[in-house]
Length: 92
Image 1: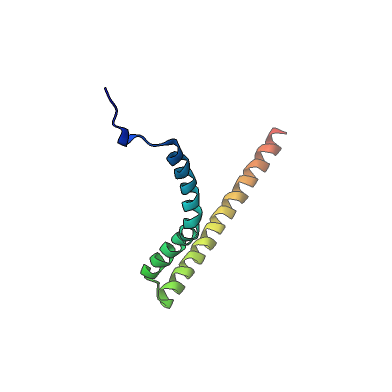
Image 2 (image 1 turned 90 degrees about the vertical axis):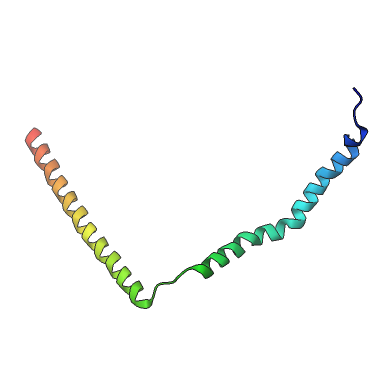
């Protein structure tokens, strides 16, 4: 059962590989920081931006929905307040 000596990794080589990994990390750090921004820029160039008319229509639709939901929530709040007042005056 003799081992193949060519497959052994010397201890000195293992230490250097850890140092090399750290050095490579710092060497590649600027590229690794820039990479997500480049990818984002590429994706933004693929976006189909809305026309001015579509943007205005969508904005008005969202604003109308917000006003509608505000009225609905306000009415529910007023109704629940009145129910609580009625129950508290009835119980007390």
